[in-house]
Length: 471
Image (cartoon, rainbow, N blue to C red; front, side, top):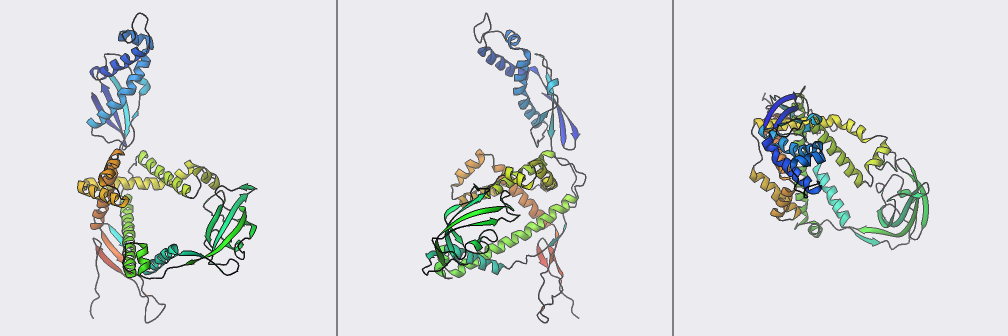
């Protein structure tokens, strides 16, 4: 097989492929034999007619199409391997209708294949970055998380006194909703436990509950907010029917060791709180690192001006965006069709709006690949094994079961790619010049007046603070 390769553009290569008869003849004979067993040729037993007779009977065009259908993918794959070309998308045959077939002569065809562009990437070491420490109050987050867990662990008990529903209660209620006299899909529930608080549903909803007693049945018209997540309901007046069964309240556990032990593998309340502090600190650290990674990639993207981005990479990112959008809408009990109608848009328009981000993501991928190649950064077998082991641990599954499932779905390469990218980012941050902003402090001598902030030089994410000169 002969292959001649040339560039159509910085992201496309043209391969002229010539397949000699000796290579395609076995495929052709099998096609003819299969056809001869399916048709009846006068004067011959089924499957025994000469190939030339079979060709005349079914027509050379039919045989040619069957041959090319089987030959081209195999020959194209071998040609790409010969030329050491990694395609980004399925190769397209450039001249299918012009391909000639004369038995005994070479078959010639052309394919166009999309590839990653070759480009120079310089000065990716020593990038000037600014680290902005988080101003999140970790202790406040811990307290809120503990209170949320306490609320979840609360025991529901009936309110014994004879009184109407009020804020802070839990209503056991039936409700239905209607628009234009028709029931709203998924717009009702029975024996639903609803905490009577301002954030329990849409604004104004609980006002129609407060003051009622068990056994009451009533109706109300409530308008959904214009920005409500489900566009089918947003801004529309909806008729509700209610029935209150019971009024409950939560009996909350005390802040003690028993509560901690009921939450997880903790012996004491202080141990649980410390574990939460660590998790939140790890999360804050990861956010700060992500912020630096975003700066790195944005600065390197600026260096890619004029580099053509492969359309298939952009389209892949657009499809990921649409898949995520569809998933999120499904979680909100709606779908893409209703979303497009509610927003007065189309899938094409949504993709167009997201296109610049898709290009940016494609450039980021090209940059990570380039740095990985220049610095010979790869994921090791040990790192991949560790990642799979951690996944198996999270899922409480046997490691080999997880590995076989990943291999079956061809997902091991995804682990390899993810690990490699993390190592590339770590390399770039390690070789960056990072300046850390100081957090604004309150001047204790003059309450309300902030101390002037400065900056701290960081090298490889380790701060070296400038000390003031002595007078």
